[in-house]
Length: 309
Ligand code: ZN
Image 1 (cartoon, rainbow, N blue to C red):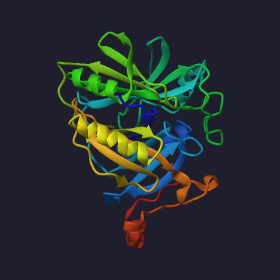
Image 2: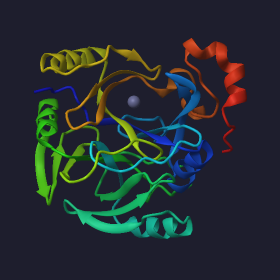
Image 3: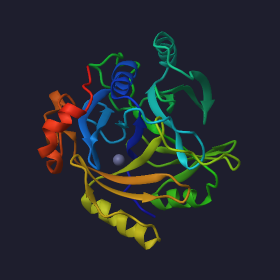
Image 4: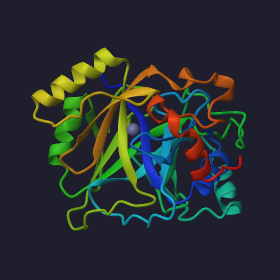
């Protein structure tokens, strides 16, 4: 069993409109945009990162806004819901806020003993705010949401799978333990950075998801450094997983592999972090390009839609 995984690192999804996406995460949810860059594999598309002050692992929601892509169709083999931790007794504040902002799909419920407020992002993205007692992670307090209600970071994600068996086995191998079961969902937990839960829901009758706007593209798990990442890569390959080589994403190093249930997993390092190419006070304000696309700056600045803050 691995001991290197420290909880989630980031969750990456797709959107149809960069401005709408930016407004939802920075204004409605009150996160900080910590990086404005491009999709390194398709530089004509933005890669926008939202999180806490520094973009700590376990807080960072990221998006590829592909202009006008069609909406995804929910189904099996995907992350169906991303969970954010918020302070205890803050859900009333969020209910009022979401009503004022006309957020879709708002619904209160309780799962694994936690009060939640489910809601949808601009492209039908599945989210929930979860009330958590004493989460030590400081919310971004210079945004639009007061700190006593602000988002601490992720609580976890919900995987919706046709067959959970092999994925449950993989999570145990990665260091997670089954903590609870409610209905068709088993909660796996790890002692990590706070973004510590993977809920695995089995839905054997549903169709496979079709990815599009509002779909999660992949979920990334955190490791401390490149040495830890190499150990994880070796161990996964020894277990039979087809893992990519280590890829430089400028702000972290990444490896990817497809899991048996269909969800794409990434393992990402804490190093070097989002202050690698701009200081913490000014994160996310100007367009940052990786070295391999720096020569495209003039074209990309023409092509990419301007984002008003
Ligand atoms: Zn990623």
